Amino acid sequence: MDIDLTLASPSVPVGDDVTLWRYLDFPKFLDLLASKALKMPRASSMEDPFEGVMGDGAMSATLEVQSANRAPSYWRHAFINKLQRESLWWRDRTYVSCWNAFPSENAGLWRIYGDEKGVAIRTTWGSLRRSFAGTADCVTDVFYGPVSYRSAETDFEIPPTYTDQYFVKRQEFSHEKEFRLMAHDESREHDYRDTSLEGLPAFATLPCDLNVLIEEIVISPRLGGWVQKTVEDVSRRYGGTWPVTRSNLYRPPPREIHRF
Image (cartoon, rainbow, N blue to C red; front, side):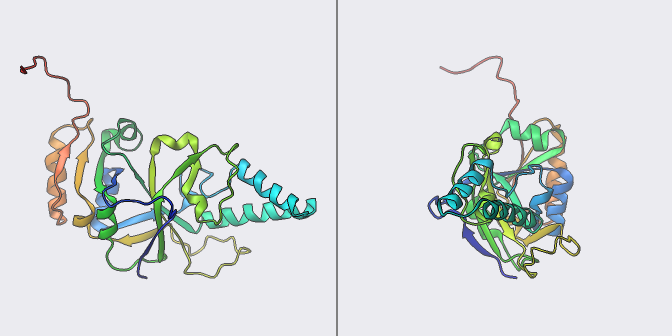
């Protein structure tokens, strides 16, 4: 299946020069090198159990709209539960690739995702976009864009579609400043009565040219300097031409300053 990229929120343009980071442990980095593909896990396997689900505020707003339309209480109850069931159904059939939109590396994200066993990919949206090559497995339409962080209780904006729900997260996750790729598995019949996960892939796979995708590999600041040579050697064995550097985040200041 050819990959068709669509901006999730046309009112929020994304420039090719937006810097993106992906923090990952070394086994996942090796898997990326070997497969030459981005693997997007199911939304239901991600840490946040509210991925793709409306918050209380949006649910309240939805019920108020139905009430204003004079829908009886039993119908409103059935309607909101229908939306909830369908949101949870799509969580098992939606795939997400998470990146972080910071101009430079982030100490907190090193702690969470990389720390003493990780590397970070530095790229730009333009390089990521141009890197896609070949055809995907179970997805075709891939949406992209920054994530908006809001209060689940006080945000009364109703997401227009199930797709839009994946570009809104609770404000407690705002430290991530996430930029994501998201796609639904549309290779199967949409039957909300079928809740079986049998045959559903755990990942959607997007083949890519790694030399276009990766602008730099940065090694965790908590790893020894000798790791840089190892990562360089492994990268070259898989045909990688990108530079490999070690983060100097915790390099101590000079004991003497030679400036005039």
